Length: 182
Image (tube, rainbow, N blue to C red):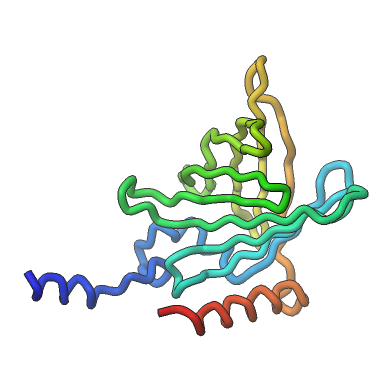
């Protein structure tokens, strides 16, 4: 029994490093920031992804700028749920809301099945699809109404240059995080 435990302990646990990693569909996002403009042109959404805890989790820090309001801030942590054998996420944001759910794939498309966003005792059911492209990905989000699914928003998220200050800050933060990892 002890020998088996030692062998299991010696196996690499870094999901991001395995060729057949469950995180592989999300890997193109890591180490980059992405920015899209909402259709009204008044707001932008910026997401910066970084591996944390030696690749065991993927962090997405995002900010919605503009629209005559203070920035909306949010963070998602993507993780491998070894019980359900799937990648899942937990999303939290600075207004106190949250959502959680699985991430599936259809080809290269990331599929976020229907889930609930919860804030102040209210819920909104939504679903989303992220379609990767050349240095970009497209987001299509729909909301459930009494009549069925209705369009929410579409964003074309373009990869920001690695020299942008935001990318440098996210990557520096990821390096600091690694210093505290076991």
